[in-house]
Length: 498
Image 1 (cartoon, rainbow, N blue to C red):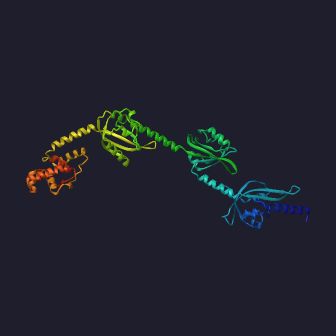
Image 2 (image 1 turned 90 degrees about the horizontal axis):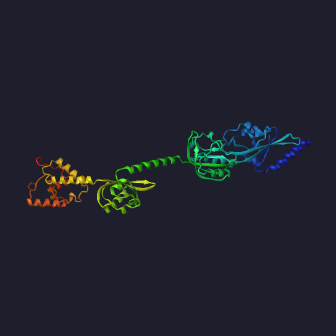
């Protein structure tokens, strides 16, 4: 054995002893690509216990282990790190995923570099493959990638060394309309996400210091022209062992559009509120403090605005009946709205007008309020009362009216007297009901006496009792009372038709 061979073998044994306990995996190859040795760490990184299980050489290694790049593309066998070092190539920081062909459930991520050992004459003597197990780091990176891409909040990652974007998620692309290749590799000078930021100088200073950038409004330029209002914030992080800044965004456009629509709606409401000729008032639902009134309200009640705004409805006391005011707001609190409730309104000069009040609940600046609309019906009510008085006058003797006419007159009177007396038909005795029924048929007292075989005085007493119980004062009012309740409608016949 020559001295050179002895020296080479001695060097190898010495090298093997030195690297046997290293945490980095080391594989030694001959110049003919034969695998001659591997330390425990290298064996563990492949899930084997003996060097022979790696394969006799680079070709067999490629048959036993499948390699993929981090982008999930397969590594061609000629580009395996073990094949490249076998060709005498030196390289560093090659990231590959290693999976045994016969056990695809197992996988390691190796960061691989190579060395070519030379003899004293400078000739290549041995080939060395050095690998670092970065599986945990890669798993964390993969989890971050999945989280980043799945996050609906728009975001980009900028590398601080050259201020270029290296990651962008779908949320940012959907929000802005950019394509991925329009963002990745682009510098912050070309796509300035801090353009129009309300505190741009602070943001740039924090970016240079690799410090957190607080939330601030900004204006993003869009690829098709125009811009979008956003809130942007920056958070420093380390990605792929490089200092980076994670920018996240909140799209303010929906909120901006909602605010514009709300403002326009409020403007339309304000115009309608001011211009409507019907007296209208807005007060707080909780405290009933008057927030606003229109000109029609001030004109109708003869109040100046300074004596109305800021006062409670109770303090103004413009609803003539305090009990009616209490009932009105109690019903409004319960139902949320009211439709045409009759009230009497007292003007500042103490004169009283008749009104119907309609009300609804509205939200003004996120506060529940009541909108009250007053309709002055004083003239209408006066006319109706005069009409009712005329009707009652002519109905004092209704015996000659047709059934159709008497019912129409009863309906007209009923419109103006919606509150029916509290007495019920069942409060009458059987005989009183008979008498009322015959009154509704148009019979006089003598005819009722003959029909019921009673003395005329007895009939007159029954008629008087019926009037008293029904709170009416004439035969026509008794007939109207019965018509309003649908009594005797099938039995009633006007005179001459019985």
